[in-house]
Length: 100
Ligand SMILES: [Zn+2]
Image (cartoon, helix red, strand yellow):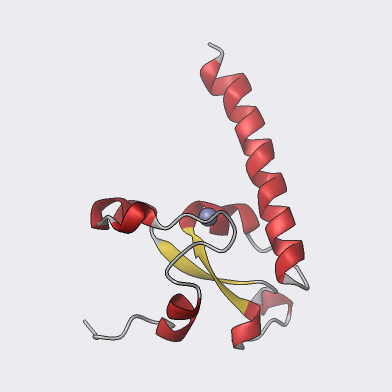
């Protein structure tokens, strides 16, 4: 295993914290390992996004899933999209999982 984390510069810039929801795993390895942090392309590579620093943000696994391959042109747009998807999922959760 390499000493350097992949995309280490991006993780350090974002302080190993999800830019979308602020999750930081409470610096607990067991939590961190389960939920994990990844690198999200604000504009997906499939839509012509690049690996430039401006197009990369640290995202937790769930935020990365909410974001999916949605094409965003700015961090603000991506954050708003993730928050919308999370709110929709929470609404679904409250309706179908909690009220049984
Ligand atoms: Zn997150």
